[in-house]
Image 1 (tube, rainbow, N blue to C red):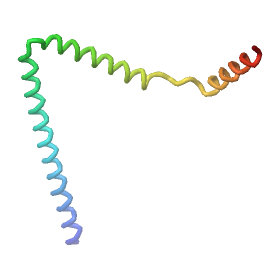
Image 2: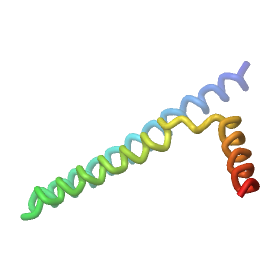
Image 3: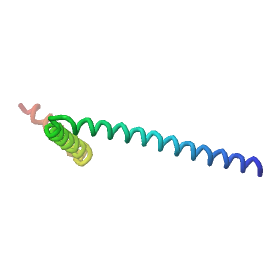
Image 4: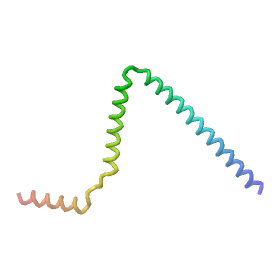
Length: 92
């Protein structure tokens, strides 16, 4: 029973330490991101940068949708077209 209690306390402590570490990483990342955002807002070409960022995000979104939303052609349809192409070249 003592061994189970000790193991549980160790897991609880490890979970708390892990959560604290993740919170620290998140806070430092957020601080860096806010500093970078402040620096970008001070730039004279901020509007142009925002427009370029929007265009890049739209392009990336289009690529993601094209990659995941398109349905590949049916396997038998591809084989039938391949056979038909071979027959056409053999007839010529």
